[in-house]
Length: 234
Image 1 (cartoon, one colour):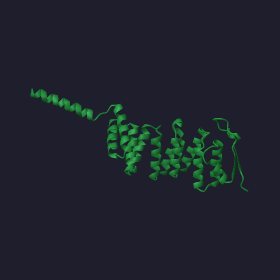
Image 2 (cartoon, helix red, strand yellow):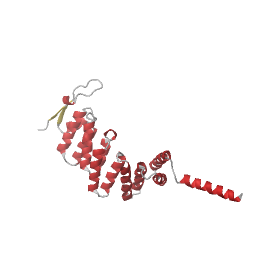
Image 3 (cartoon, helix red, strand yellow):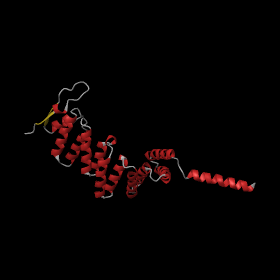
């Protein structure tokens, strides 16, 4: 009887041990979700615990590495953060969040050439329908990564021809670098994309540019070729 009890106890303990060190795919997703909630609430220790379980279960789980990188970055351990971001990108190259974090992390570490190369690959292979051109381009410019930042914003303007946001961001950047001509050119292009963009006509007027806004039809903007901007500077 005692022998049977010992065997039963051993089997039970073994099952508990196995259940404690393994996760189902749905559990991995739930643990990443819990980690994100903990992270956003400032409970980084709990976030790391959840993510560690996910990564131990499936080392190729991209979101687990991305959020672990976020935890390391909060702790100012940028080297480990970039390593986690690199794994997130490796296992899911389509993740714009992971790509962006990896590129900016490399740049912060002073690995400029690697950051530029990663940015070029990101711009080439991203999914355009899932790309937040304005925020990604602005984040590159804020990190003094001019080439990828300008490329992303230019492409954003191309993909969304009636949205002036990317062109206004470009103008602000060029003005901040004392490149007034490129700044003006970007504002003019922005006006032609959307003459009703808040504050845009006033900014052009301050710069000595005369703007002519045709009366739009109901629920529509005037075609680009009808939007005129003239330089009134003498």
